[in-house]
Length: 79
Image (cartoon, rainbow, N blue to C red):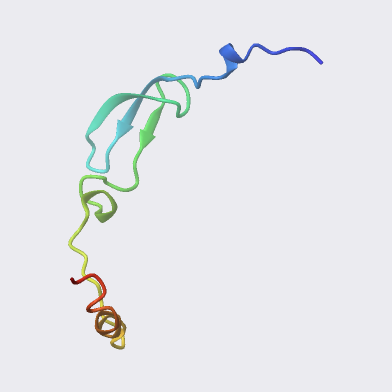
């Protein structure tokens, strides 16, 4: 079995790519995506998507589940 030099294979190849946002803005960054000079076009805008911004989501109470939970554990953490 041949001995391999892991110092050469252990690190990913970081290179510059262009990232294009959904609104057309673009910027260059280092990445392991594709090859040097490739373009990554985003489908979801991280400046407006709730997964990145935290959003203004509210918990919907379907069939009183949240209410029942709140009643069941109302005094759990109170001293």
